Length: 120
Image (tube, rainbow, N blue to C red):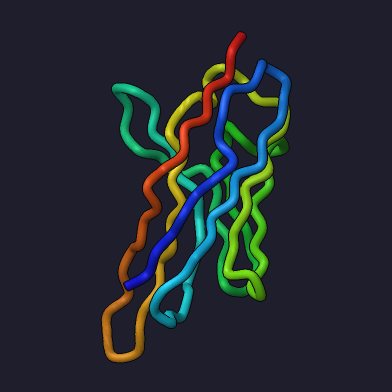
């Protein structure tokens, strides 16, 4: 099994910054992508940012220029630097890894989520 543990969420005023971390442990897997998703109350879970094994990144239009995704392979950790936060960024943020174990199909792994609340 693969375990993902997020940290770094919290309460911040609009215009502030937070840095989320996602630490991966457990079974050895070959990672295709690592990403961050978020889900606000009453809304569907949406992609925030993703980074491929080759280092390419992609962002939701709503966070472009404000959020930066990165990864440290040596530490098995992914990060989401969030700047210029807005109240509409308030959500539970989930770490995602799309990966496969040798002999198994590629699948999604999810963390438990971390709450980010941005006050106006």
